[in-house]
Image 1: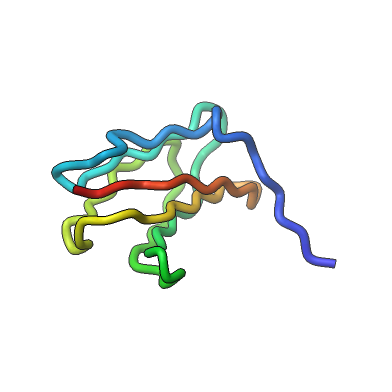
Image 2: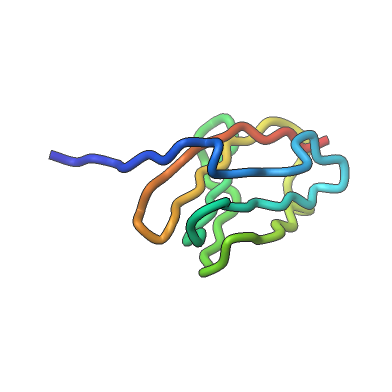
Length: 87
């Protein structure tokens, strides 16, 4: 059986969320991030990065304005998903 560990979104911050300059900060409160993936509404992965830190700045300049889904995975493979709006 496949399973995914999910951690609560209150341990994960993403700002600004309505991003005018297409630069977004992703931050964990308790654990180090491992991977951030950004998907468009068709489900296509349009951005991915991996790292070992509690905070990262994403430069999403290549993406068009719209709504995206951000999937964050921590070092223990726990995941959380949030909506992101780029203007």
